Image (tube, rainbow, N blue to C red; front, side, top):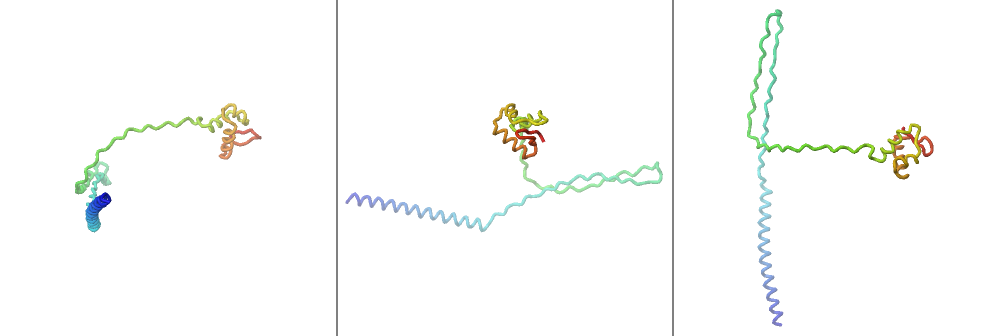
Amino acid sequence: MKKLADDLKSVKAEINALSKKLEQVSKKADKLTKAAAAKKAKPKAVPKKKVVKKAKAAPAKKTVKKTAAKNVKAAPAKKTVRKKAAVTKAAPKKAAVKKAPTKVAKKPAASATPTNKVLTLMKRYKKGVVIAKLKERSGLSDKQISNILHRASKEGKIKRVARGVYQLA
């Protein structure tokens, strides 16, 4: 019974300590929410960026007067002078970063794909070629060749001459 009473006292002490910590945390949370509300109410003024306009140099205007006499020289050209715009302080420019030149990857040869391989084989046979010969020369399976021929005929690259015989369109 005494042990139980001691355990209860220690639990009570821990609960009291936790309640004090909870009060402290809630006070801090209240302060933070008040500070956040104050920031929302009074937004800081954001300085506007100043625009700097550069004056362009005007090309010299040439005025040539037509005269009746050929020996008379034309009057010298008049130059117009523009005032330069007032330059305001601009933000310092960041240093330009040089990028290393990128190398362009070379494309693989067009004959690398099985479709191109079959089409280049078909170029050799003007009257048409049999599927068995395409299989033998290309080293592809029956299914691959039939798929390639089907796709190519849909795209209009080849046409069917007879059963199992195809030629370029």
